[in-house]
Image (tube, rainbow, N blue to C red; front, side, top):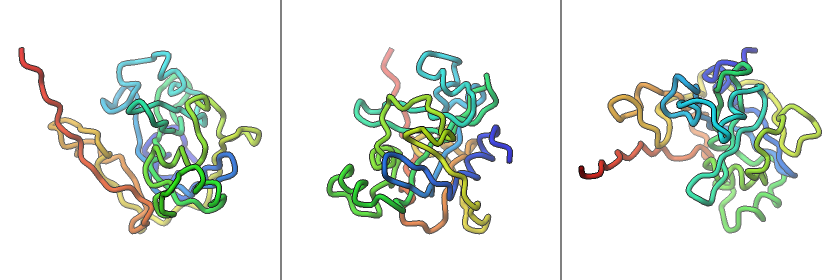
Length: 198
């Protein structure tokens, strides 16, 4: 299996199991990011201390902090030295339900991992997990490939909150999800940025 192309990897990650600190999530929604050739990627402008992990080796976890309060996680998938990653957007908690509930407060079971910040919270993933090997059985967070989801059950479209040329994101239909799955997060288009007055 080619796990260096972010689009191929994103599609293959649907149905995979992400295991973290007593909870297992079946991945139902992802987004691909292609580094230097993708304006939506954190690595678009090159290697920085924040994005170092995205440049490989593949199979590691790239975490980042957003909105000053949430951690999101990505599966690094480019060849060593070339940034690429897949954002884990949503999933279904299939084991460790009580633990996930305790981490997510009053959330409904459908919403326990419905969205990238909720997913990491349910799994107990924190920013300090950045760089761990997801295929090392000793890691506190691991990924297990499962039988791929049938093509007829997969949909794709623009990424959530990420615009592309023309502002509509249509040039990058790199979000993949399992059709009809209740744990898939709602789509929200990017909001146009207001330009400051000269």
